[in-house]
Image (cartoon, rainbow, N blue to C red; front, side):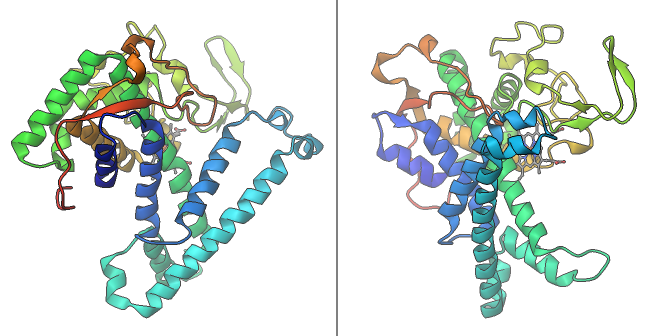
Length: 355
Ligand code: HEM
């Protein structure tokens, strides 16, 4: 994050593509957590995941006729996915090999700088029995999951939160006042004090209500015949829950299309899966397991962007004219990238000791 803040500071008073930087920083953070500091395969792997997310989000005619196997070939989706799968498998194979080589060469250094691949490999070595065996394919799948499910979602939330604040300058000002008061009082930018930022947290909740990063939950299959709202749901029906529509339902939300973080300030409604009118992380046994890590990836970037900079729209554009159109996809990104002018407020620290 500090690298991002320094980069933005170097572009002070000129327009930057903030969307692009938010996504690349989030991918880089995930990459560091998963693979450690340096790997020549990082960039290649991130490209593959991005391509996969785009393909998975596209409309494929074969999904409507799943048993018509010829259609899967005609639409070209299956060959594309297979090619991508082979490519990601090759890169992951190399990354795992790199980690195995590192493990045999340096014992104590490995402990000190453990990343996700190290942890999974250690588990693999220590539990190589018949009752619980983690295969190399399992390890590859976990890494893919973390990238696919973790990076796009968090980056999308940061991008929409910044967009909504630019659109509503009085909300941004209030959030900046809060963030600056807390960090100045603490004398440093720290993740632990973000919990004190009640207004910023309401902004994140309101962003996830209007712009849930993953709008359609994981499809469920109906276990037994039932009736919902007068509709008969036969057993084995595939049910897709539209979290996006639920978050904007006027039956549960006043002025549902407006961005009002205040609605969450003194409210007990939370995204932990027990308030069914608000399910940006889903609910039930398939609910998102990455909430804590996901929120950390949203809170700190937002707090830092608000602490270090004031923000302006380029070319004299008025805030009410900012286009908020959504793109089609498995995660709902902005259609147009958010381009803003950063005006430095608190300069970033010169040494990497602050965060
Ligand atoms: C703001 C960030 C995030 C949002 C909004 C989000 C949202 C969601 C949603 C809506 C689901 C579907 C839940 C359901 O169907 O009930 C889901 C599933 C999942 N999420 Fe997240 N997520 C976020 C971050 C993360 C992160 C950081 C990770 C991992 C590091 C992660 C890993 C997963 C996984 C593995 C699943 C599938 C769970 C399963 O198959 O049972 N997510 N997420």
